[in-house]
Image 1 (spheres, rainbow, N blue to C red):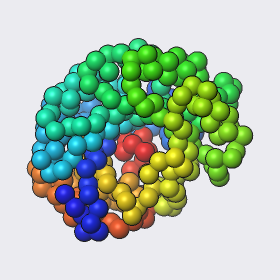
Image 2: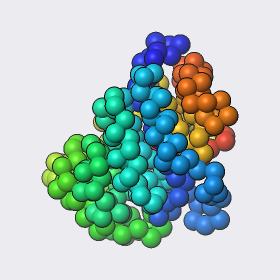
Image 3: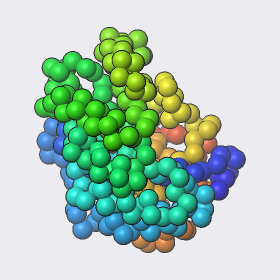
Length: 266
């Protein structure tokens, strides 16, 4: 489908959980995180049905996000269920990589095509500080497992404060070059102030060519990351919620005062 600005909407990002096994400083508070009740989160059957309804409307690209999608129980089964929907051409996951070594081969066998891995530094101590306790060795092991499983391309998402010329960003770039990975530099975003930029090495943040919708863990279809607009698939029905989100998709992002990165996906 085309939105009001003649953009073809073919990409659905699905946040499957607001839980995460890290506490990255720019994404989640260290403690006292207000989590959604499990009873409110979409079931895998509901998510598969959303995809099944979305495909005839033009969606053929799916990305699973979080929180951290790999902490949700039986995530491999969800990938398999989505892969079984006729018309889905591309399935990807964005992950912090901590659990990827365990899941990579199973995800690939279930139908996953690609993976994006968050990595803001290759310095173990800095990584520990940024993530409030993360072990970078597990990320490196996860990247190796993803490569072995045949997931391709493997993209690394590196958040930067100012530019890709920062020392940590340059080190990540060198690591990616040495390991045949694609790197994308993402300016640190702020939902409440509307601060975002075009991804260096990708297309995210380019509002004029935005082709995506977002589904929250609780079933809200959102036309834009930087917008409070959302349409409840349980109340409206899936197709009406999708059509409403496409019709209401703004020309460009502004601010989002009702969501956090851990419950909507970046």
